[in-house]
Amino acid sequence: MEKDKFIKMALTGNEAYAYAMKQINPDVVAAYPITPATEIVQIFSKYVADGLVDTEFVPVESEHSAMSACVGASVAGARVMTGTASQGLALMHEILYIAAGLRLPIVMAVVNRALSAPINIHGDQSDTMGSRDAGWIQIYTENADEAYHSVIMAIKIAESVNLPAMVMLDGFIISHEMEVVNTLPDEEVKKFIGERKPLYNLFDFQNPITVGPLDLQDYYFEHKRQQMEAMFNAKKVIPEITKEYNDTFGTNIPAFVEPYKLEDAEYAIVAMSSAAGTMKEIIDEWRSKGEKVGLLRLRITRPFPYEEIRKYLAGIKAVGIMDRAETHSTMGGPMLQEIKAALYDLANRPRITGFVFGLGGRDFDDEQANTILTMVKEMKDGKELPLYSFIGVRE
Amino acid sequence: MAKKYLEIRWHGRGGMGAKTGALLLGEAMMQQGKYIQAFPEYGPERRGAPVTAYNRIADEPIRIHYGIKSPDVIMVLDPTLLNTENVWKGVREDTVFIVNSGLEPSELKEKFNIKNNLFVVNATGISESIIGRNLPNTPMLGAFVKATGALPFDEFIKSVEERLRMKYKEDIVLKNLEAIKKAYEEVKEA
Image 1 (cartoon, chains in turn green, purple):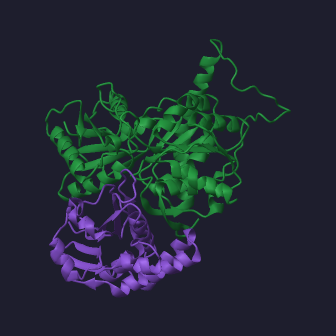
Image 2 (cartoon, helix red, strand yellow):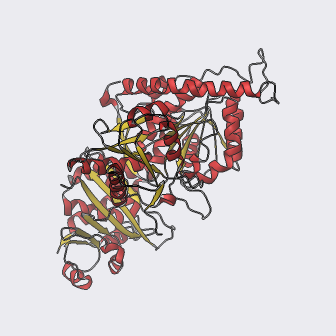
Image 3 (tube, rainbow over the protein chains, first blue to last red):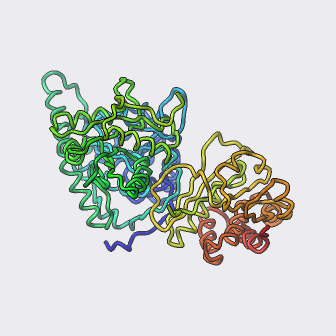
């Protein structure tokens, strides 16, 4: 496709998700609305009512049922999508593992939102960080444009390895912000994703199968080992499909991580999602003052990009890792811990500190970005920093 | 650092269409080849409660994602909000105010002690006479285009028309366009 074939649209993150789903035209969508992801379900159900998609839309009474209906439809060979946020994802938790364990390539558009209590509708990543061991591929996007392309790519990735995938964007910050989105023509999306070709199909009566039977000490472990093999395969497949997408459409979307001005960096930040965009801008300001600082944006966390993180952070003197979620372990946010583990046996590993910021949608602004950069710079120059710090909170 | 973004902050009350105004402006500027952001500040949504919305407009992709602290343009849909602290947050000497009010610019300047460059339009009066109720957001856009010269008026009208047609019936679209044109003609600089 020629680069100028993009159709520029002004869309909010939720509109971008819903529009991608319309172009994907899945066989089944089962969903339950929840703030700030409500619009995905609302807009998509309008597409269904207007006859713009062929999708069987299943309006269920809860997210637990939504994911259960997705599992049933996917087992029957359908291409299945859904969308949710926060408490909705928490309510799905039990079924997330079943979707992954049954190797169903369901694709879910998630709008990141804080978990109760206290009740809060705004953006942080507590929800999906809580499902990081459920066996789903996890893709965190920076803005509405990337979210749009990532959902389309996720269909192909999920169906290539028979694992479910969730694509994330930040609640309100992106879900309700209108931005320029470079959309593709319908036929290009259709061509890229093709048809789902399931390995097994519950409705193939010539080759009957059983789904979800008891699997005890004799075979459960082998099945889990195979599920892990699929995640190892995802590590190979994700960069291939991302490259194919970029080559076909002229996009420039990174696969697992996006290195930003790291070549000569003495210190660096690791950030995800919309906060990474803000951080890039502030890093440019620091660069213009002669500071050798860069950023590694973490885009995919499952499978975890262990090799890429080691490649880009080796030799950097000090690294600050930003988490918009807590683990309540007293050891810092989830990405701080996982990145530390990835770097542990590296001879020239950086000094590391963590930052928990933006919980409950607390605005992450230039001031906080400057505070983080100042602290990491001081650590680079030899100052001892705590295991991790809270940024932008009243103590 | 030179300012990369034109930053606009909207102040209205729930039901006046501050968010829709920001979205319409964003879309129109995108059609001018600009990169845009349009986003509301979300609190409890109640009719009559103060609402803030934002626009960023730039020649390059916009990477930052936080509220606008020091706007270039402030759009005030309800002049009583000039009594609230939020409207004055981050106001610089060169910040431009565009206010919906039936008062003369000089009266408004005096009443609220406005030292900034000020544009005034009776958006409520215009929308009540043409649309039939107080929906000042679209006439305020007409005033914005006149005051800032950010884009050609006819192209702006075309873009708003397209967007409104996606959602509203013919007569609502035409009335809104008429209100925008009237505001464009009537806006006064203090």
